[in-house]
Each structure stands twice: as structure tokens, then as C-alpha cells.
Length: 184
Image (cartoon, rainbow, N blue to C red; front, side, top):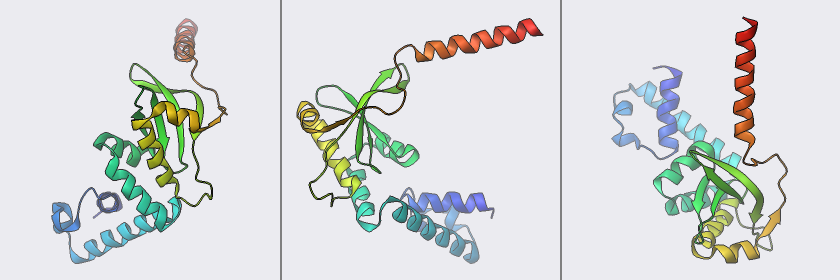
């Protein structure tokens, strides 16, 4: 068994996509390969738990996942963030690792940040960031205007998409291609 095959199976176990007793790839392995897969799974789980802030954050992420749609769970697993539509129709990107909410706007198949980042914090800062994200999610689903009124607003720190950025990028690429053709 190659390292990639072992890591693929271990990742599926660590993210609860598959269980060892129901995974045909795992059941077909030798005893030594099974031991390698399980040790890699344990290492992945420990790494994620330490990276995300310990057992409390891990439990909070498990609770958050139960509230998400399958697409949101996929986004959380692959991009560490997910999008949600608020009760008033606004689109937001939530990041459980930091507990922040960012307003986004959809243009065709892409979503771009359009402005301020929002967040609400508990007074003692005792809650894991994933629990804060769950609170943000529930408030956005039920009372988006109330969430926006009560939240802290942070000005953007990076360049945001202004509606013409993609067109300028496409034009620059076309100019570069035309110049290369003339030079050839």
C-alpha cells in the first residue's frame, strides 16, 4: 500500500466520511497495513484537535457540523469556511476557526468579499470559536438585521472585489496574449 492510499483512507476515517468496519478498502488490507491506517488516522485527529484549539473546539465543531447542510459540511472540510444566506437575503462566509463572519456577493459562479467583517463575542471570551460561529449562524438564519445591528464591524484589511476587478484582469491577460502574438 502506498502512502497516498494510506493517507486517503485515514483522512476519510478522521473526517467521519467512512467507518473502519464498513470501508471495503480498509477491510481488504493486511493486518500491518490496517495498523498503519489507524495510526495515521489517530495522528490526523490529534493534529486537527491541537490546531483548532483542543477538545472544546473539537466538540464545538462536531456540534456545528450537525446544523450544516451537506454542501456546507463539504465546504467546511475542504476550505475551512462555508457560506450561508441570512433571513433578509444577505450572503455571508463564516469561518469557525476564527469565529468571524464576512459579507459576500455572488457574481456568476464566484463569491467575492464586499466589505466589513462582523463578529459577536461572549464577554469572557470563554467559548470556542466554533460555538461562536454556531451562534452567528443561528442569528443570521433567524434575525439577520438584529445580528448586523448587534455585531462588531471591522473594516476590511485587504483589497476587495470592486465589480470591475475581474474585467480588468481579463483585459490585462488578453493584452499580454496579443503582445506575445505580435512578438512571435
